[in-house]
Amino acid sequence: MVINHGSRLKTLFRILLPSFIADRLFPDHRPTWKLHPTSYLDGLRGIASVIVFFCHYTENNFYPLVDTYGLDPNQPGGWIQLPYVRIIFSGRPMVHIFFVISGFVLSYKPIKSIHARDMDKCYTALSSSTLRRAFRLFGPCLVSTFIIMCLAQMGYHKVQKDSWAEHFWTWEWAVFHQITWGWEWNKDMRPYFDPHLWTIPIEFAHSMLLFMVILMVSRIRLRIRQAMVFSLMIYCLACGKWAGFEFLTGLFLAEIHILQNSSRPGWEFSDKGRYSPRSVLKTLKFFFHITTLLVGLYIAGWPNRNGDKTPGIRYLLEKTPEPFTNVPEDDMAAQKYWFGISAAFMVWTVGEMPILKRFFEGPLAQYSGRISYAIYICHGPMLDFFEKRVVGTPFIPAQGEPGQEGYREAILAKGVKGIVGAATSTQMTIGWFIGLCILGPFVVWISDIFWRLVDDTVVKLGRKIELALLDDVESPRSQGYSTVA
Image (cartoon, rainbow, N blue to C red):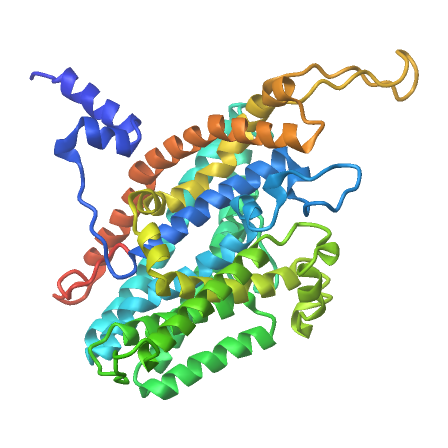
């Protein structure tokens, strides 16, 4: 038997390279990516995932930059802290955008089938999505946390346990009581091996809620269905359930999107004249969405602390409704309320503004969208492994006298902070940028590999399991549905 070592090395080389480089070197294996009606949401999700990575990198290494510009009289603010600019590391509102997008995308196919009067396709899509949702969300997380557990036991990461068995059972407990447990409605889980995965059980539970609501309203007349969904959105806010509001908002926006793109005739206005009704409405719509975007981006820059001292944010805190004020178990409840409201309008606005839609349908945003879940999963462990080595610390002189109580040895300068310094906002901004240029490519590279080897494999596995379990001849694919969503 002849073993083709050259072919194996070529395959390994293609796997280890980032896909955008491998596709150029090996064009025969290059996949074809086509845009679909909700591709812009994939791009938005991808950019949001990158911002979440920027957020945790900034909070872990340059926390003073997170503060509102100009609040500290002893520390002149840096330009990166200015409103609208600071959106680049404002990761918390991105989670709420994720949830609105999830509600939209998961609802799109069933709602489209309802409008086509094809209830079989609607129920098939609901059944398929419900069955595969656990594989889609939990599978990559189980792989990533298992790898972290192994690295920790080998002494490379976090705390090493006394034995492999002890560490395995710790991982098993985290899987069943944190990562896959989505029914703790009033508590955010912080999985032991990766706290950044706290959103995953929330995503799963509210996906199930969304499917149940779609099933409930699937046979109801259009206007009554919209009224019921909108009423449930308000009900969630009245109960303080921000995630439920965001998922159901995605459902509401998906139906609006389908109605706007349907062939039903709408109001007919004359196009004649500079001030025709159509042109006036178009202008008003443009200014409305520009205003919505500007307000949403300002809210997205909500600082982690001193919000009550930040112009604009202070006013929003005063106007926050009761279910989201004075919540003992969640000191960020007011923030979540306004993030949810702004996320709903921003997702809507992106779909209504052609220039934004084209950007999020562009190659950079679409690539980010493909690896978005991998970025979300991989960026935390990657930062844990490398950020201290790369960012380092500035020189800190010794404190006190040797041999006396309270004496602290000098800390030698190392890493980016050791070269640039971190005493002023300018030094921190420069250090922030240099560190990001070093860590960013590594995070994208590992995320790209994880996407192809783990994330995409889990999606395909879920599809195969579903097809193997089907009790009838027809499958989601035979009925014209993608089984990846």
